[in-house]
Length: 279
Image (cartoon, one colour):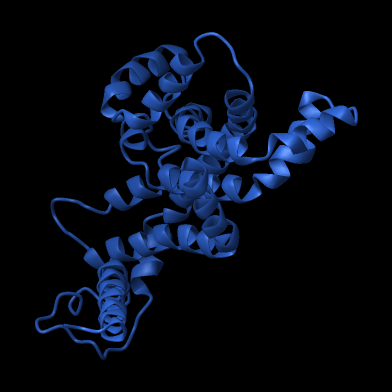
């Protein structure tokens, strides 16, 4: 039989192998896409693949100069930032109310919010299209922003409620004794303590909005089309320029990567605290 030290060593090796396989499965597609984006069309799918080559930026030049991808990128950035700011402004007080206040139909309202996030987008796209057509909101920033706001609100309230509930109520009671109103208690006590949760929720909402495809495809035309739709426009019947498509995929991934690195400390802490709060 294996002794305790041997079992511990084998367990460590197994964990390391699992992490290595997981990292490979996660990073290799990004690495391969990056290689294709730096190759010309003739070298992109050479068999066997040429791992040593002279990189070129011609795909990125075609992406932004010929394909006007900068406009799609700008549209995605504007819509995502506006929708997240709006969702946080509404979601943070709502999460606090669900965590600290009791009122009729509390669970019903909470589940309705969750349904808007958990249900597939195809359930809502036709009603949205009909309503937006009547209201003149098709292919507008405000129209797409409102949809992303509604989609993210449920996950923001659901996530932040757990963080608000995990804050010791004695701190809020002390603030109320010192004369703080409910609103002052929220902004001076609860929000600062829930900053890691807000950061982790914000980046998740950003990823959901940034990668959203269905609503951006069906509810926009040329003016407000987002980055994923911009990449789709390079897929044509006559020619599949995989180098440009790969370049577009890399450009779309970069903001999420940089955003995640910038707030990684709050993100990891927020996910950890969220898991403990959920227990």
